[in-house]
Amino acid sequence: MSAHGEPRPLASHPVTGLTGTANVPGDKSISHRSLIFGAMAVGETRVTGLLEGQDVLDTASAMRAFGAEVTREEDGTWSIHGVGVGGFSEPEAVIDCGNSGTGVRLIMGAMATSPISATFTGDASLRSRPMGRITDPLALFGTAAYGRKGGRLPMTLVGAATPVPVRYEVPVPSAQVKSAVLLAGLNAPGQTVVIEREATRDHSERMLAGFGAEITSEDSPEGRVITLTGRPELRPQTITVPRDPSSAAFPVCAALITPGSDVLVPNIGLNPTRAGLFETLREMGADLSYENPREEGGEPVADLRARFSENMQGIEVPPERAPSMIDEYPVLSVVAACASGKTVMRGVKELRVKESDRIDAMARGLEACGVTIEEDQDTLIVHGRGPGGVPGGATCEARLDHRIAMSFLVLGMGAASAVRVDDAGPIATSFPIFESLMTELGARLEP
Ligand code: S3P
Image 1 (spheres, protein in one colour):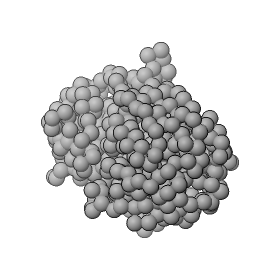
Image 2 (cartoon, protein in one colour):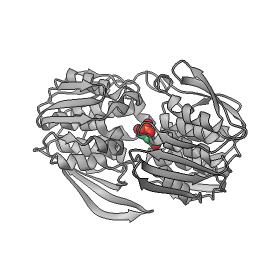
Image 3 (tube, helix red, strand yellow):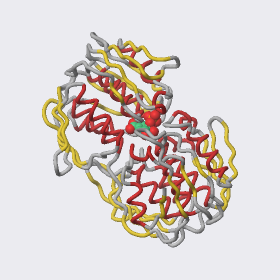
Image 4 (cartoon, protein in one colour):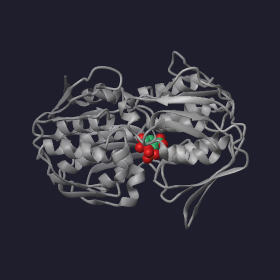
C-alpha cells in the first residue's frame, strides 16, 4: 500500500542519453526544521523553497494543531506565525505524521517540555519504527510516554510541567535524536548538553543559532559537544531552503549508470555532514564535477554535473562516512551493481530502522535483478556486474519507502531490461516531482 492510497506499480525501462537540467526540490531536513522552529519563534517566519512533499505537509498540519498559524501564499512562500518557546497549545486530535520519522521525532522533542499531552501516529512504516530512542532522553526532562510494545506508535506523550535540563550522550548516530533533545532543551531552564560520538547533520544547530538561540558546538575527545541555553526568545527568520542533496542523488546516479548521459543538477548544498555520497562516487571513478562552487547562507553550494561513467570501480566505503550519506546507501548500491568489482558498505545497521529495513529491501531487490549480494546485520556488500551488466527484469518491493522505490527505478534506466516497483506512491513523501523530472531528462517510466 502506498502511504496515502492504493499501490501504484511503475516500471522503469532501459534508456540511453539522460540529458538536461534537474531542478530538484528543497531539502527535507531543513524544510521540517523551518516549520518547527518557525512555530516556536515569536512573530512571522517566511520560507521559500520549502519541500512540498507529504512528509513536510504533515509537519505543517501538526504545527497548526499545536497552535501556530501556517499558510502557503500563492507564489509558494510559506508563512508561519509562531507561538514562542513553551507556547504550544494542546492538540484536539491525534497528530498523524504519515511516513515521516523526522517529523514525528522532532515534534515530540518540541512539545516534550510543555505542560500538554499529544498522541502521535503514522502509516504502517512509521508505526513499525522505534521511538524509544527519543522517549528515553525525553524522560530525563520529565516527559512521560505511553506507546505500544517496543516503543512503537501510536504513542501519547505527556509533556514535563517543570522540565529540568539534560546532559545526554546520543547512543546511535542520529540527527533526529540529537535534534529532539535540543528542541526539548529549548523550554528547559539552564543548559542542555548533547554529545554525539560521530557528527551527524548539523542543520538544527545552524538554524537554532540563526533563530537567535545561544548554542555552541565543540569537538572534544568524547565527540561533538553541543550546549544550548534554555528559554531563549526565538526571533522569526526569512529562510531560503537549499535544494536537497539526498534528492539530487537520484538524477546524479541515474546519469552515471545510463550510457550517453550528461545531467546538470544546480544549486545543491554540499554541507560536509550531507555530502558523503558524492565523495564516494568520485572515489569510485564517477565523472561527477562540482561546477561554480560558492557559499550561500553560510553553506557550501555547487552545481553538480554527472556524466555516464564507464569505468567505475567498487570500493570499501569508510564506515565513519556513514552519517554523512546515511540516506544514500540504497542508490549507492544501485551504482555499485553497475560498477566493476565489489563495493563494501560497513557500519550501516541504522539502515535497518529507516522507512524500511533498507539493507534487506535493497538486497532482495538487487538479487531479483541478478546481482550477487552479501549482508550481515551491519554490512551490505554488492558484487558489481559492470556497465550494462545488471539483467534487471524483476519487480522489486518498495516497502512504503520512497528511497527504495526511486533507487530501483534508477536501476531500470541502466539495466538490460526493465525494473518494476510494486508501489511508487511513497515517492511523494520526499520528491513529488521525481517522475516528471526524470522523464524530462529522458527516462521511460510507465505504469
Ligand atoms: C534526518 C536524519 C536522519 C535521516 C533522515 C533525516 C534529519 O535520520 O535518515 O532522513 O532530518 O534529522 P536519523 O537521525 O535516524 O539518522
